[in-house]
Image 1 (cartoon, rainbow, N blue to C red):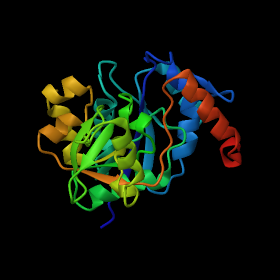
Image 2 (image 1 turned 60 degrees about the vertical axis):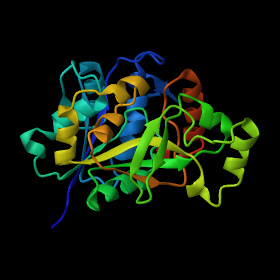
Image 3 (image 1 turned 180 degrees about the horizontal axis):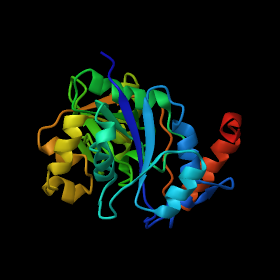
Length: 263
């Protein structure tokens, strides 16, 4: 039996650090266009749609030939928006749902596939992480870290520098990075790509935010605290998304050097 995968790109105009982010131009094209072009032909997805509450975003996407699902404006998270789409009758035949962030124009298909494969293998939710390369990145609260159990499941996500180095000190932290036996021994940065079984996605969105989520401001702590199993695949690399004007410049530089993205 073939397990079908639905990809949903949740996006909205509201953004604090980069106003009207989905429509912000990168090399003269709106961000959402780059994201759509990136994912439209990914073979890991059997179908992909954009989910939004903005007619302005919808018009841009329709102009690209992207299927659009209009969703409620009341959603607080992209996960809620994805779940609304997944619950519609026309998508009932998709057993796995992938949440593709609307600010990830450099998403690697291999990373999305790794998350999807975890769900195929029986995890409730699949996501990815990449080894951290510097102490500065490790300490940055804007960088979400994850620690895994021996079987690859998420133990905890945090904005703090985890796992804690008991001996302390910057030099010891540098040693922890430099002395790792291989990349998988390094502290891990969470990559915000998700795949869910249909039942796990539904269960996640029925949960109320808990104390850990409210403290860290990380919604993935909600299903984790409730006992859902989140598999974490360690991948070799993962580009950052677009959140700030500095990110725009970095991504534009990368896109300008990637000829296939300019086709």
